[in-house]
Length: 103
Image (tube, rainbow, N blue to C red; front, side, top):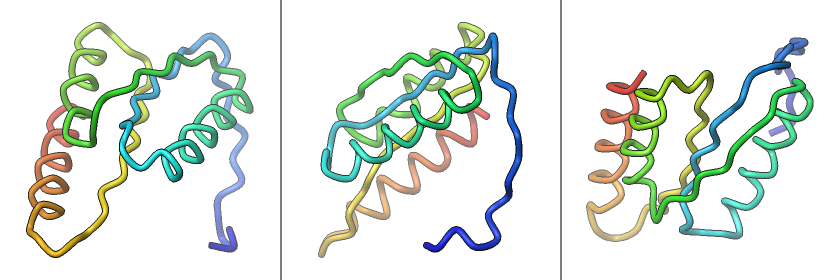
């Protein structure tokens, strides 16, 4: 993506801790996503804590636990690669519903 049309918003995150929840699968992609989330937190002046989970499906469990503990901001990152089986649809649907419930 070129970034054309992306909003340019100054965010003041000073005094907030961003909880970054990241899956471990597909590290070559995930490492870039985590680095971007950390850069965004740093640019906003927020602190962050990184929580690693085995896969995308576990994002919901940790996000819910963090929300129940009063987390100020939660960023969930996961990668699911579509293959020849319906596994992609099952995981994506479950994670989407789970994160929507947490929100």
